[in-house]
Length: 511
Image: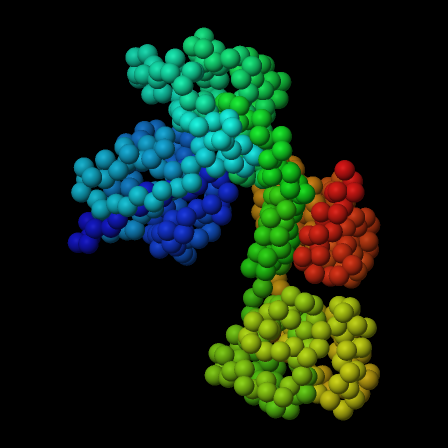
């Protein structure tokens, strides 16, 4: 045992949507040495962990457990803290709302382990909100009761006052009750609740897989059998369920229920993924590009050392902008070296990245193809001028060649490389057979070609035939057509916000 003891933080992971975790919860995840997490804690929260942090899964599903007893989970926390580690016990919802957080805290006290409790957004209040159900309402409900749907199996009889629950609170919220659904409905009706009382069952609430089934106390069991609804489910019982007919904001978002494959490089996909998520889509990341430094910095280093010799820098992508800036600083330079140089950005997102430095962009073509770029470059003149293009090690030569034809001098300096990551057969099989993908999006010709190489051209043709294909622009769309693919979605402006809007328009027209 280390001399200095660690600490355990009991952190509420929230109801499912990873963005509903608290700031304190995120902060502790970033600092953690060990994270012990549950089935209902969204695995995306583990992306906050520092490199090398230990991940221990202790969830249970459908009555099965990865650890057989709560005591073993307690022992894991205590042992890790005694080794001097900062431990996060990540629990779905709120630790102290039917989450055994109280038991775990008592175990830590008994072992003399320092601990902290970080409340989480409970599914009891968040999930109904995402289903468009206000648990209280001035005209319908002034009282709520939160009830566990399964009591400790070792209890003799029920300690719940079903008569009071049936006739007292205006709204009942039942957690973990699907296994006892029939018995719960019978108890409520037998103890005085009207059989016609509305009930909503909300599965996987606050996630893109959310599904809501509405009925009454007397027919909901039959409806569940028909719809084959499975846990996890939050039950809401009471008149407030009727509010869903006009307050159903989450499931009404334009891409709700759509699963979209994003093939862009992982560190570049966040903005696009957030746009799709805000429209209700479930994003499935499948990066087919990995951005790494070039094998040789010589050309770029020489260009930076001789920066005063250049008239114009053409940035073709966000990756090029970031790689150039990082290399500039690593060589001891700063943005003062760019004084007097014309800056051209291909694409509004590339322009935004440069403007983030506090620099003003001189030239942004309205058309993100070679013709459009050449048109704006002619505003400053091309003949006799020197151009620097920091970009990927391998890229199309159309722009440099056309500048040379017009009398300009060009230095194409590799600033990064884009590799195709490897996937094992099991990952590919899961994507092709288990993931029900609606849309496959491609941000460049290279992401498309790499995707085809990863899954195989023969399988690609049959699998993509039933999917909607979305391409960022005409060059990528042209590559898709070369492989015999039908492109369903392509924005008029070749930006990711416009691509997201085009997806929304496509499905609205289809509906």
